[in-house]
Image (cartoon, rainbow, N blue to C red; front, top):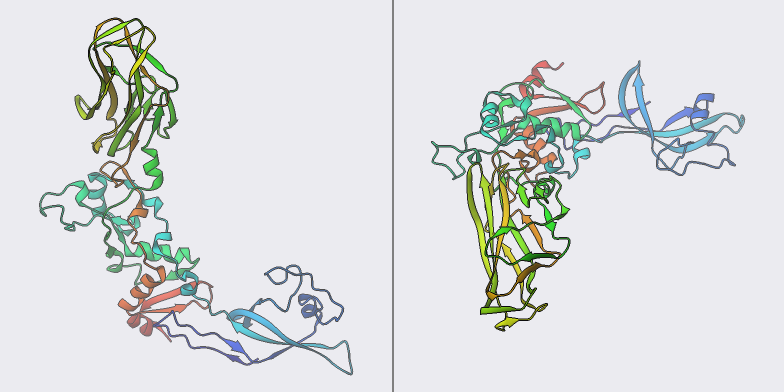
Length: 438
């Protein structure tokens, strides 16, 4: 058997040729005839219509994987192509198969193709974004995957550092290990597994660490009033309670008390909307036709309570009196608070005070069903005390193959496919490679 071996440029593993043979004549032994399922028979009907050969029989139109060995030592892996079949004219039972052998030229770069770093998963390294974990990273090794360097991003004077002044950097070796695992490959290297390489990091280069859609949704809630509520008009303000939830994945809102309790730190906006009107239970005399409603939204953090938003909605009865059963002063309202930073455990609730200038009679204030109280996440960035999803740290639009190629070129590394284990690569610096070779 004559084999032509391609010499791979170990300095540029992205360029790799393939091994091939001249035509090889295989005798039609019982074993070979059985492997090729008697393909020489003219009346044979091939059953295999899949994309995988020998499923269930041999199909000459598909690649047939093969291994070429010499004295039990593997020479190369690849596939066999059947070119023709010869039958001896004097002995019709004597069959020969003319085949060609081609080495498998695929390598890790073919497998990585155009896949991006953002497709890698670093979820096992998710952690709480706080000073404890930031300081701890300074004494941990690359096996922890991340490190918080003191890089001046323009948020600090360089002396006083807050939690949100520091962003995690990912160890370069972590990316290399993840890339090989993604490609279903492995490597052996004294250089890539020792200092100084294991101390190299890739800093965070984004504008902000964004929360995932799951983290954003976990912070939201939506509640409504399920039925019309009828309240006797007084000059005392009282809680505005929405008694039905349509969405609250983290169980933050209490429909009995009307209190929202933040499960996570973050920046929130709260929206309250609906429609109301006044209803005369008896004849009502008004000293002034003005009507409306005050709305206050409070936040309690620890022992401190502050108003994070308030509004007043005006309308006019248009008449100086209402007869029993008459409605008036209809109001539609929608109010959004300014952005407020909440800590886990902080509470938010709504209070209202309707107003009308009643001289005599009984007036009720009614809230229509379908009024709602919701929150939105205006600034979906990871804040102190929240869980940091490491996916938000990975650079965008960087190909895995480009990062791996740059490491190989920058450190003048030699990459050689292992001769005994498929999908394994031996990677060393040029000096180590040539000094250890034979």
